Image (tube, rainbow, N blue to C red; front, side):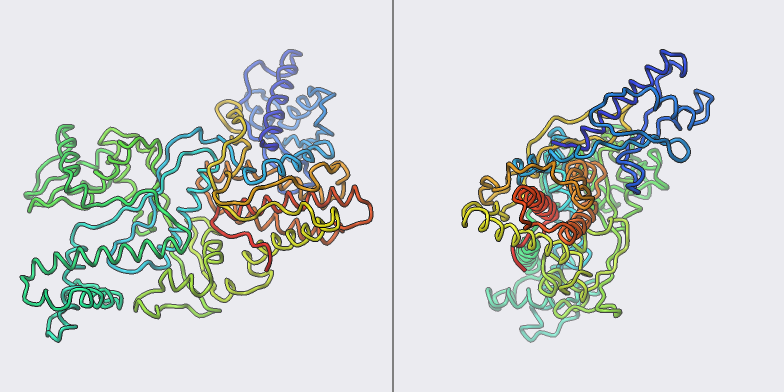
Length: 608
């Protein structure tokens, strides 16, 4: 179910019907109006929805927008059961005021859907791959990696809930110069631990974690590599070091709630001949040329500022060649859309990668790159610069240890990827209304406590609150709505759910399932119901626009509306029917908050 999508479709249909009536009466032309939008005004005094059709028609009709809006308004059917009134506002908006209680039937439907409320088949099962973090396995994960992990994992959850078939992937950079330098660094530290005097490599890795890895190798293998040939010794160091680093990366990410479907090895592209095959493909297309002994790709033919080297003069492929082969591999696995989350310092690589996709015969638009800005870590007003263990940066493990997974993930998702952010450690740890994650989780816990108390009063301890534990799944759902007038100005998306939730408790029947929701007439009640009705559309929009930050914002708004409702409308009133209706509203709010928190990887506690 998606009540907002459903009413938008009704408004769209009726607006077109009004135009047809006006055209038949000779008041407007018979030319079909342009695509128009249907949006909820920020100011609720301006109605439930506003339509801009009159302003789009003004040029063709050679009439003032307000005059067109008046003609259309008078051409609407007079007996629409969902419409209370129309008003013309501003430069020519038509504002729609729905009948009181229009969204009230959403409440029992939310209880029935429970863990699946909010999902849809908007994505139509399209295969999407999201690659994120993919940090070099030569050190520990840092704050930038943490933000990328939260963004990528939350986006994957949201797109799965919106009906896409999503695969999470980590690209393991286990080939190239950085791996050679990694081996040299481990070798130097290993020899130092054995009392050897060595010159540390100029491009080596200085972090304390490299010494810890070398200590681990020494503890496991002893000094048996001391007399070994340096090339063989470094080869072993690389293999042992990569295994240890990869396991630490995996543990850190799983502790952050992130699990990947695929760990893809860069070295496998070399070993399997995919880089060579990709270079040959580009040569066959006539897009390569030799210069100064190297092999160049003519990326300027696809909009890049300069051509790029694919194979160096020494015959070694560049990272760019590997990237092209890797993305070619992605599309050959059948993904309709490939999403990469990169640091903002890679912005110059976007155009050349899209050009490379065109060069190999793929649609550049099918490769989407989300650029992620930097994070500044603060403690009060002071910038936190140094790690306790890593020596160069604050690690993901340190962050989770200090503020907890919930706060870290919520804070990282609150802002769009393209926004630089300040992460305030003191705020993230505070238990106050100023801390947004605490504010939202407190609302959920407060509702759970209220419902538990009310259930005891209702039936002497039977019934109770449906389970709050469980995971996020893809969900099935309702029928997707139309794409809008003239090719899709109306936002698509439909109802359904956020998935059954692996490991969750059975929902059971709510003690308030049969309550009379039409008794909920207070403005605070209506505002809360309206917000709950928005959730399926909000998830679909977050998936379509690739904007996970919409959901923390939604959760904060929903929590604020619940707190206002709780303050203004006493739930445990003497009037049994009104009490049951308000408890049903509280239960639906609990479900909405829990489902949103799950999508961004944050827990929904029952007590705080």
